[in-house]
Image (cartoon, rainbow over all chains, first blue to last red; front, side, top):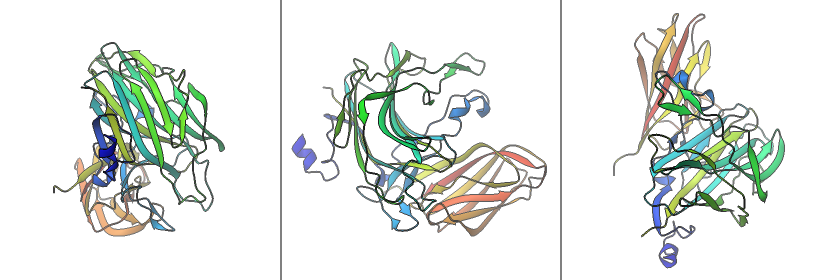
Length: 283
Length: 110
């Protein structure tokens, strides 16, 4: 399989499991990625307010005011997830599928992040965090591995990987008794990945960016996060647990992947994804 | 090849009062666009408000593109845009004591 991958210039930079569930090269469009929205009944105003404005993803050519188009890692377009210019605002892009075998799943992506280049300064602490989550359900549990790279907090560089297993309150939405919602991306309850400090290549001005490799493995059978790798660093995932809640109606076999960006100040934060590959292993 | 298309909800359940600007949307890949404004509710003199299309090379600095939408008393209004790059947005100003709660959809096609 490796030799087949190596002969393909687009795929040789990935290490997928034998079955490709989806491969999203954003030079070919948005590839089924859309905006996350909260649950509601009757009126949009019934939504939990944190879910109301998670922004539509864009196709970006990485165009800068000073140097023009940077493009993506392999082509012109990447998926851009952009916050509003309001501190602590979060934007989330999601792709929804289902699983067919309770076995290993591997997510790989090439990503980068930057603040909007509205100031002629380094701005390296303006993006608070970028992250990735899975939303998975089997017959017993809904479980949601959450991982984020906390770049900065309140203007100070942090530069470490975190996870979240703490559950947020589950609220009843509307009056039918069928709809509930929990804002799982709330800023509370994040824990450090062991030795998860990692400095990424930010580069030297706000309009230059470098692409990073991300790999996250999860096991649908054991409900465990089994690997976190970013560029050259394979992190220790001992004790890195997903969020787990009882199974919910209407979510059987769900396999969603979402990426998000959060801004630390009143400036847009951008997460760019050159490509995303989700793979699995089954007969 | 079928042409790519994508509709972005650039504002949802957004309350407009006085001067307003929609969130920028990067869409240089598209060759044609339609902004739809759906009024979920409105009060005061919303009808007749001119809403301008703006374009930007960087998402930061903006020019009037020249196309305008005039809001009506219908639920939906729209404006077509051709030949733009690399960002689009709408700007306008509702009269004093007027308000509208809107969904703004940007329908793009390659």
